[in-house]
Amino acid sequence: MPEALEVSMVQSVAGALPGGTLTRTRPFRSPHHSASMAALTGGGLRVKPGEVSMAHMGVLFLDELPEFQRAVLDSLRQPLETGTVSVARANAHVTYPARVQLIAAMNPCRCGHLGDAGLACARAPKCAADYQAKVSGPLLDRIDLHVEVAAVSAADLSLPPPAEGSAEVAARVAAARAVQAARHGRDGPRTNAELDGDALERFATPDEAGRALLAQAAAAMHLSARGYTRILRVARTIADLAGAETVGRMQVAEALSYRRQPPRN
Image 1 (cartoon, rainbow, N blue to C red):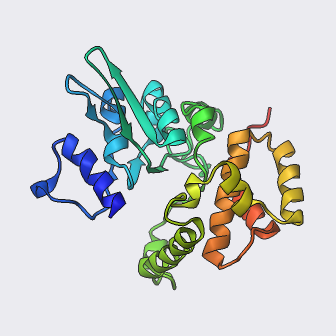
Image 2 (image 1 turned 45 degrees about the vertical axis):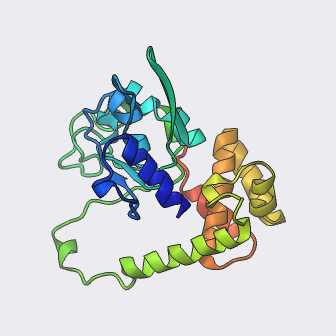
């Protein structure tokens, strides 16, 4: 109920609350890559909430990530870190909630055929480096999971469906969230993504083997303090999905595998 009330309040301010009643559906927002900074973070004469606030407690999906203006993308750095966005205008200064799950998608390069020698452009692989560099390092540092997905061929479309479908995955996620809610209590963080300070140290500190691996990786991967913290949160979530009481070396290793590697000179 508290989350439904928060979502409904934001939609009410934006004039988008259907029927004037509480909504119990998590929002999904997918702005076009031509969206302005005001459209994404909020603004206008009446300082309405932007897409990042309209997606509060839901998903903000940014397709073709490098095609967004760089300044627009970087305006998301503070909301992703704090879960709020402050909009300052001459006539008002308003802070809206912005606790979202950011999901972004992008091609490896502008032509999209980096891994195919027969179709890749003549500038490969430099074209990929230039294209990916349009997304700033600080923003990438705030994205916990970096997953490369291979292109789907026509033959792949004829394969049988996976053994585990969306319903089974949803059930596992719901069970993990229930574990987190019970562990953190009513007044604590709602999910592991909000763990910080003493709560992070108490619930997400790995065992000795996990700490040793994380220390080695932090030096080798030049992890920032933010990246270090986010790996702990991801490792705690991986442990919850597996039904593990504590965070071990295996969970830390998997969390590290999702982290973007620094570019080689």
